[in-house]
Image (tube, rainbow, N blue to C red; front, side, top):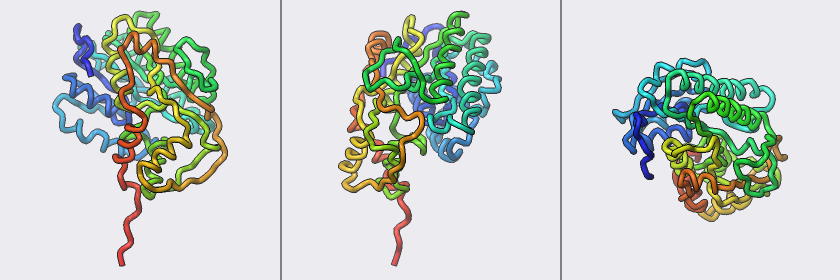
Amino acid sequence: MPRPDLAGGRRRAVVTGCAGFIGSALAEALVAEGWRVTGVDCFTPTYPRSEKEANLAGLAREPAFDLVERDVAEGGLRPLLRGRPVVFHLAGEPGVRRSFGAGFADCMRNNVQALHRVLEDARAAGAARVVWASSSSVYGETGGRPVAEDAPTAPASPYGVAKRACEDLARAARARGLECVGLRYFTVYGPRQRPDMAVRRMCDAIWGGPAFPLLGDGSQRRDLTHVSDAVEATVRAAGAERPAPIYNVAGGEPATVAAMIAALERLAGRPMPLVRLPAAAGDVSATAAALALARRDLGYAPRTALADGLRGQLASRGRAAAPPLAVG
């Protein structure tokens, strides 16, 4: 991965959500590229703390990494921003389905309020730039056509609404002089993926874990992004000259859920147990990204073919989800 322009004190980074899926991979990549990284996480109970701590096991041995346990939605980031670091804001409340009903308040607090506090602290402290995680969920139903960043947004879930509100907050912060770049990630997958996410659950089902809950008929199409590609785009956004406010980040190989199941079954040489359920609220029929803007400004091009990414994630899960073998 080419190193971005690190002039002007940009060798320091603060990564919020550093114990999560993308955040931990990003922090590792930054340390490997020579950055000094302060990781911030409050270990929200969206999944077990032990799994998040395992994500940090390698970083814990790195002298260039420090962990601060803090809830950025409550503020308090400013003391960590001395020396004009780049702020990579990956913290948030993930998940379309959990944003409905009882999960709505957490979705708004941990996405909208958290970004507002991060932007305010970054502007007050003179941070070099904020690179933050938006989502393809802002687009809503598109019929599967590749959408560019200037396409209309019509979120189909409270999560998408929250991320669109975050984009408005970021635009307001840019108007006040803060450099900030949002990335609309399209369905990121790969090692360390959250336990509730589809590819992780497919892999676990293959290896003997709970049956995969197939919502609808499996015709939903997703433009999946390998975590290594998401990380590369994120680092590139930190060093881009005169970046746009927002970029799509995707893998460029849309595939149906049924096709992903079939591919994993072929790779594993065994069937995947399924539980068929009705389609879920907020679950759009298809996503696909136009990547011309990210290619032009960031030099971004996805490197990981979907087949290779699925093979790697299947191997990373191994038989971790399998029950113990009976003896005797």
